[in-house]
Image (cartoon, rainbow, N blue to C red; front, side, top):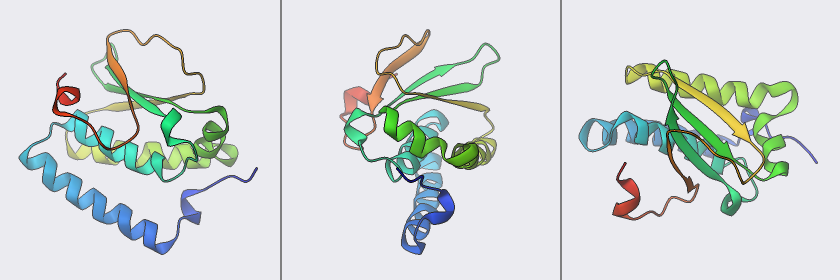
Length: 140
């Protein structure tokens, strides 16, 4: 199985990513809080790398230091794709997430899990990676 690197994304996907970042910043300033905007950003990046988005979910919590903590639940083969060779892909994702978080004045951490069943203390329930969600899911 090959690994997918952010550098291997097509120009079209990179262009889409840039447009998404700009639109996310605009939406954040009008209707979203930083936690949800960063979650959507992470969801967009990861969804373009994995092959089984129906098995993926993102749980959001807070660390003891007050940072926003994101935990990705992925299928085992998708974990390899997101981590990438020598961890370069996950490192790039963390860098992008940290830059976006700095713009909103928050700190973040990101963890990847391959197992579907885990307990994440003081976190909202993991939501599927799919982008369609109802208003009740937006409530924290």
